[in-house]
Each structure stands twice: as structure tokens, then as C-alpha cells.
Length: 471
Ligand SMILES: *Cc1c(COP(=O)(O)O)cnc(C)c1O
Image (cartoon, rainbow, N blue to C red; front, side):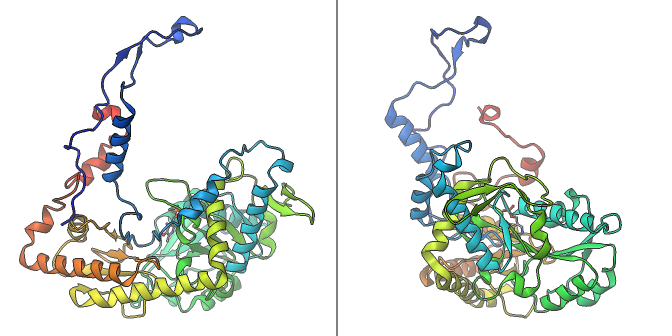
């Protein structure tokens, strides 16, 4: 069974050890420190310390990471290398000296336009949720321009929505109306029609939805929104299932955000840098944030001249390194490669679903796309997730979407091969059997990790946010 480095093993640096050193620099006396709190160590000690810390961590470079909704696909190292070429650029550099960087931004916008069929893009938002907020500001600006913001106060979303959707709509000043999904796990058209009217600003939805089910009435939904003067917002976190096969525009969406760090591969989780570009169609292009990278036939430049721009939504130009990685990923795969990635992600997810289906409850009948949601038959989702860690596998997303109780949301992505999928399925099957025969082994799990079962509630109520609190 899996063994992970533990805190108890030797060679961890003691982060205490204050040292007295005289600091001979010309500073005002009151600013000088009397003591330096820096450990005095050999190089090899520092190397071993950080190597050991990395062994206590988990990432996609170690094993599969089937975290539903988060699209934890493999991050090719070439992309990191290419992003590193740009690391000495400064955002205040003259445009003439950063033509290559501007070209990458411009080309990325063009590629995202092609993938989504949208008319224009901003690369500024720093993550999906930030893209949503930007999108909601665009909804505001659009209705304000048409003199309707006063009455269009409501944003509608399904009860399967990601938690960031209602949060973004609320932060942008809208009221949120949640509608129930139907018994197939899709938007209930009747429920939608009963709440849409001239107070509706927008409908926010992801497709395939968070159950991994494709909303087959999406074109009808778009018609209902547009007939009522409202906009349709695409949460693009699930684009991995459909890229190259259909597009947000074909489905009828007006505004989309994409999660560069999910669909187009950048190491994420733990709050690392992300990218949440927002694309729009039609007259919405006049409201986009500035600046936008443009090309005039001879040179690339930043265009601050957007007619009714909502302004800036982030300092400088967004997370440029993430843009470079997305650019490199898309360039390398090409249109056909992206489409194949989508198809494989769907095939992998359905293969895994079929393998574990006899041992877990599978709510809803329709075909799944790149992810699926199951429920343990004889255990809590939390205990299954903790037990998975003992086998050296990252747990899936749990307790989301909210409409499935004890949900385990599994997304293997296209990166995994049949051997990894089979191994994961076998572990899931073994845990299902343990839940029946020896449930205590689940309740005490994990047994083999550096940190054993943690008190999640206490951690949320009394978070320890710096090492100083610990040592
Ligand atoms: C991840 C995700 C988001 C939020 O994106 P972040 O980049 O994490 O801010 C929104 N909606 C869905 C469905 C997601 O999976």
C-alpha cells in the first residue's frame, strides 16, 4: 500500500532557532532588527527539507487527480518552459520591446474566439469566478445602456450551479433566483418559464452541467431568454467536454468565461494563478474591459479605446504566464487535438462510470460527458474520499453538486490511460466492499498519510493561517 513521507521522519528543518547577528548597514536605528529569525543551515539540509515537503504534497505529477469540476489534466512541462522565457518582462515596458508577448495575447484571443465562436475577448480576469463577476458587470452595463437596469434585477440559475455563480451575481448587485432541475438532472423548462420576465437580467449555466449531463434544451433556453430581453451566460468550466464539437455561440450564449487553468492546462488548486478570459458577442463587445491586445498589420499594441468599456478588472493585463501556457497548449494540440481531448475525456469518464456503476448508486439515467456523480451505497462520501488517500489517489470532489446527497463527483480527464482508470476503478470497488464488510476502516481513514483525519469543522472555524501559529 501507498506510503507517503510523514512529519515524524527526520531532516525537517526546525523553523525556530533565532540567531543573533549584527547588521552593519546604514539604516535608522529604530528600523534595525536586533535578531534575525533565519535558520542557519547547510545547502543539503535545505534541499532535503524542500524535497521532503514536496513528498508530503500531492499533484497531478504523482498520480491521477479525478477532482470533478476542476479538470485536473496533465500539465505538459513544455508549457512551463515556454512561460519561463517571458519571466523577465516588466508590465511597464514600452510596447515596442514586448511585441512577442503582445502577439501571444492577440493570438490567444483569436484562438479562443475560434473555439467559442464569440466576437471578442478580454484576457484580464484572473480565474473563473473573476470571469463570472466580469461577465455580470457586462450584463449590468448592457442593461444600463438600454435603460433597463432599474427593472432587470434578477439573475436566474439552476440548483445544480457551481457556488461561484450565485456569489458573482450577488456581488454584481443582482438578486438570485434558483430553479429546480427536472428528474433527468436538467433545467426544468417550465420552472424556467415561470420565473423569466422583464425583470430578468440573465440566466447563468454551465453545459454540460455539474452532473456531467448535457442540457439538450439549451437552444430552447436561449430563445426563452432572448425573447424576454435577457442575456445567457456560459460558465465555461466544463468546456473540456465539448471543445471542437460544439460551441457556446452555437448553443445561443451571449457571454462566456473560460478557465484557462482547467481546460488549457496550468497547475492549479491551492489558489495558484489562473486565467478566466471572457468572450462576448454582438454589441456586448463595446463593454469589454480595457486594454485588449490588437494588431494593426505591422505591430501589436494595447487598445484602450473600447466605446463603453466597464474599465479595468485587474491590474496590468491579467496573469500573463497562464496565457502563455494556454497559448502553447492550444498551438501544440491544434483544432483536431482539442477535439480529440474532448472526446477522450468523455470516453474516459463513461468507461470509469460503467466500471464502478455496479458498486455505487448512479443518480439520473442520461449519458454523461466528461464527468459523473455517484453516491456510496453503504458509506458517507467523506469516508470514501478519506479512504482513497490510503491508496495514494487524490479523492474526487465531494458534496457537490448539492442536489445529490453524499455526492462523489469524478472527472478523470483525457490525460489518464486505461491502466490508471482500471486501477482507480479497482480501488473504488475495494472501498465499496470495505464499506459493507469492515466500515470502521473507512471511518478512521486515512491511515497512511502524513496528516491523518483532520477536523474539518474546527479547521474552518479556527483556521491556522501562518506557520507562526503552529511553531
Ligand atoms: C471551477 C469552476 C468555477 C470557478 O472557477 P475558478 O477558476 O475556480 O474561480 C465555476 N464554475 C464551475 C462549474 C467550476 O467548475
